[in-house]
Length: 91
Image (cartoon, rainbow, N blue to C red; front, side, top):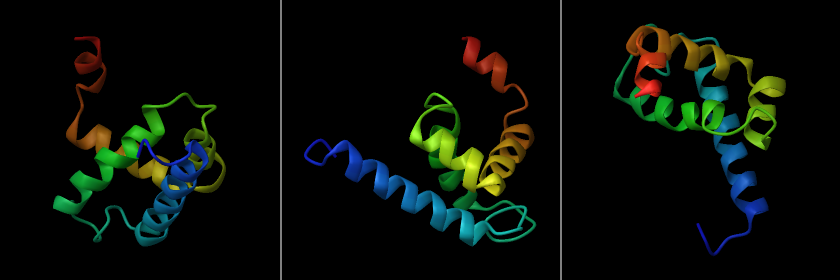
């Protein structure tokens, strides 16, 4: 990644987020109504884009402005699988 410009990396990450959002659509999880291994992978990536950067970052803006289903998905995954999320972050 270090050999690529910041703009290229942002562009690729945004493209990936848009693709994931399109695949997710209105589904509760990536493959439908039940979580799968794929959700673990997608959540790891998407959670970083949503909460690992400031809300004013290109990724935060993308989720807020264009990909509300990704935000809903991340919140759903967090609530279901990490009900102690805030406690874990304090450690």
